[in-house]
Image (cartoon, rainbow, N blue to C red; front, side, top):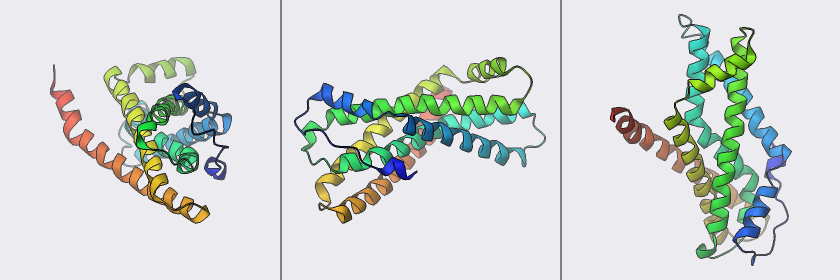
Length: 218
């Protein structure tokens, strides 16, 4: 995980929107993807094992499906936190006025969406292997077919919003924290606390307000 926290060289502050987007997407490397995929596999395995004990009366298919749907809800928060850990030092080293944050907010949102796709692919493949019914492709197709399009689209939207929020928090902290290693560490710690707090609050609001409205609709 230490490799995630290693900042990359920062390009010139005068970069325009397109160079900023390109620079950020160039950091979507194998290490970050491997971290997200590995997290998806480990969390999925742990979640399935956690469900098996209290839900022994349910079929294995039902348990795997419950795990995939639950992790689809948690995925936006998890991938956004992983992205914050990796790109936080980069953004904290960039002191810019808020009017120039747009490209970084957009890039972080798009990167979170891409990372969510990797995360959910790892979760679905892991769950299908746990089903172990001899038809891996069919099991993957079954689990994908059980995901509601509206719920999946909402997860993608939340990932984009959370990624942008985490980037905004880091860029704001860059303007508040002192320069140097101590200031960077302090800003990173505050960014993590604020990021987790804001995303958890938004998830609670989504669960209490948005989900009941959507399920109660036509």
